[in-house]
Image 1 (cartoon, rainbow, N blue to C red):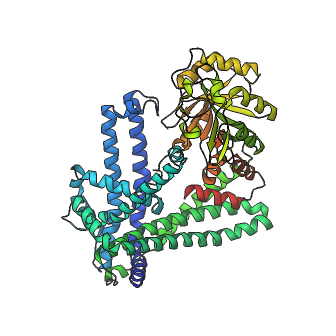
Image 2 (cartoon, rainbow, N blue to C red):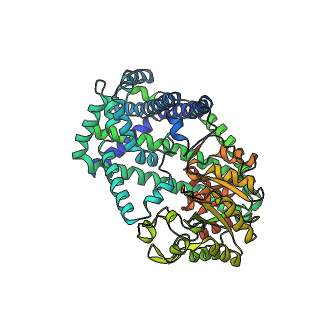
Image 3 (tube, rainbow, N blue to C red):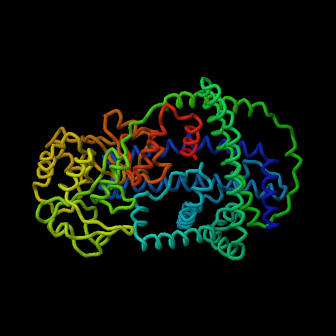
Length: 589
C-alpha cells in the first residue's frame, strides 16, 4: 500500500507540473475525435449503404451486407482507423508519462515520430493480437475512459436479458465475464510496453504484460480501484457543491432558476470532461510507473518552469462556457413538458407472475401500463396461443413445439417462471380480460413458418370480432407480413420489430419497435418527420427509461411498468431543474 500511495502521489505531481502539455494534448485529441473520427465513420457508413443499395441494415439483411466486398474493405479500414486512434491517443500519454517520471525533456514531434515507427505492426498479422487485446479491455476501457470511442460499444441488452433469464445462463455469464476481466487485467500492460519500447512487437508486449501481472496483479487491481474510487468521489463532491446554489435559487427565486440551471449544467459538463481527461492521464501515469518501476519522483526539467500565459486558455474556456450555457438554457426551457410516452408492459408484468399470462396482464394493468405487449403464435389447428418461445422447454420443461400442438392441448399445461406458475392463455382470453380492464394490447405475431395462408385475415377477424381494430397495435419481426397487414386493414396500427438497425428507415407502417442499442437522435428526429411512432425495447433500468422518456419517444417497452410510470410522472412542469440536470448528467456520463 505504501508503494501504491507513492505511485499515486507521483502521478498527481507530474500531471500538475506538466499541466499545460496535457491541456494541449487533450484539446487535440478531442478535436480530432469529434471533428474527424465521428464524421468519417458516419460518411463511410452512408457510402457503404449507397454502394450496396441497402436503405438500412437489419437483422434480416446484415449477413448480405457485411459479405459485400466493398463493405468488407470499409469495415477493415474502420477497424484499422479505430485501432490507430486508440494507439496514438493512449500511446502519446504513455510516452509523456515515461519521460516525465524520469525527468527527461521531450517535445511532441519526436514522440509522434516514435509512435509512427511502430505503425508498421498495424499492417501485419500481429494486428490481430491488438484487436484481441482491445476486445478484452473493452469492458474496463468503456467504464474507466468514457470519453474515448469505446463508450457506446456494449452487448445489446436483449441478448444479456435472454442469457440472464435462466440460472445456467447467469452462471455461464458470470464465469465468462470473470475470465474476460481476469485476462484483460493480466494483459492490460501490453499497450504501454509496446509504445514505450522502440523495438518490441505486439506479441512480445502481450507476453511481457502476462508475465509481469502474474506477480503484480494485486497491486495493479488496488491502484485501479483507488483511481476509480477517487474519481467518483471527486465527481460526487463537485456535483453537490456546484448544484447547491441552484437548489436554493429554485426555492427562493424561481424566476432565476432557468438561467442558473443552464450555467450550472455548463459548468458541470466542462468539469466532467476535465475529470475524465485527468482520469486518462492518471491511468497512463500509473501504468507506466507499474510497468517500469519508477516510484521516485523524477527530476523536473528547468524548461517546465518557464512562464506560461493563462489568458488564451481562460478566454477559450470562457467562450466554451458561454456557448454551452446558452445551449443548455434553450434545451432546458424546451424540456419543461409532461411527456406523453406510452408505458408498454413487456409480456405483461413479470414481477410476481409468469410472462404472457392472464395474471401478468392483470398486474400490468394495475401497475398503470398504457399498453400491454403479448406474444402470439398460430397453433396446428389455426388458433392463436399467447406464448413467446417456439418450444415449451424454457417455461414448461417439456419438448413440445408450439406449431405442432393444438390450442386445447396447450391450455391444459402449467408454465413456471421465477418461482411462479400459471396456465397458458389464448388470444381470446387475453382480449376479453383486457377489455374488462379497459387497457389496450400490443400484439406481437411470432412467425414460425408453419402458419396457415390466411393467418393475417384470421387475426384481423379476431380483432374485428372484439371491436378493437381501432385501439390495438400489432407488430412482428416479419416486415413483409406487417406491410400486407397494413394494406389489409389501413385503420389498424401496425409496426415492425427490429433487433438491429443502422441507417435511415422508410417503412410504410405506423410504428417501429427497435432495440435500445440502435436508437439514435438522428433516427428519432427522422421518424418524427414521417411521422412514424418509435417504441424502444426492452428498457429495464432507470437510466434507460429516464433517457427515452425525456426524449419523449412514442413508447417504452419494459418489464417494470410501475417504475416507468413513476419516472414519466416526474417529467412534469413541477419538476425542479436540479433534478433535470442530474438526470442529464447521468445520460451523458
